Image 1: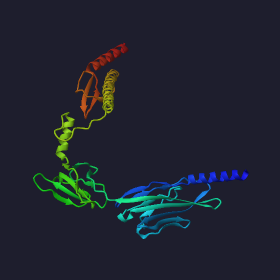
Image 2: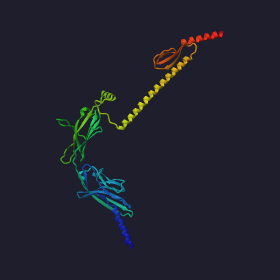
Image 3: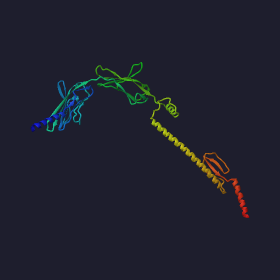
Image 4: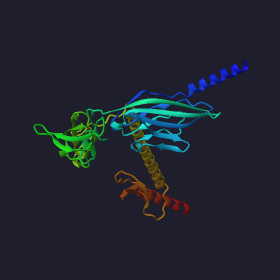
Length: 369
């Protein structure tokens, strides 16, 4: 009974491991001539089992040849016609897919993926999966035109290009034409890209391209036409007229309308402008008030000095003060304009001198008595 149970456990473990190590893939793959294709072959790694060898072989005309082999010594391509055209992913456990590049018609055939694992008790398990490869030629599609970074409206003197893009089996040949009304289209280039290093107004016009490959009757596919426009650069006179129009609030006669900005930018500009204008008005008012205060103070001070003047021999006493009024004369002061400054000069009042002389005579007479 114990031996029977052990055998059941062993068989279940073996079946379970085989289920984990099954290869997954597809039965048929179509590849495009001169293109590339991948033949899938994957499995789920199982603990206790290590991949020992991996190989890909092809069966053609009832003969089998090994293309690729991976073992402890590394990767090996065994058929010369597949050199530099086939590869298997590295450092990707469970992925044994085969990539074939630059497909040729002779690559048609049945490809077999075979993987061998070694268990912990040194037993070997081998699985394989076969995929049929059919290499087909695909006719070229209708090409499309891709403009350069500047688009189809380009300023004069700029560098730009037009590229013809089509899909299908390579090699694909391209031709560029320029069409004119009532005239035969002009052949410009046999390359996929049409380039201008220094675009001129004479380069403006209608362009289209053609694409062709070697499939079938070599049908030529033609793209839709595009119009290339060349813009003149604005002259200095034009720029000056635009600046004048903007400063006067007039619409510009030529050129594109000014770009529209988000509303919140206009609101911010208006707020900043209002604040600046308010600050300017306050500054002007404050300056005017200060000027008035200074003028009143100087006049009062001048009057006081005049009244306190003594009999010392000083014909004039001049104070320099900044003022913007015209020259004025009075009985007490004489104002003289000098280089933007007014000299306020003080002289003796005749009436004051007469009064002082009379007081001195009277004082002398009383003293004699």
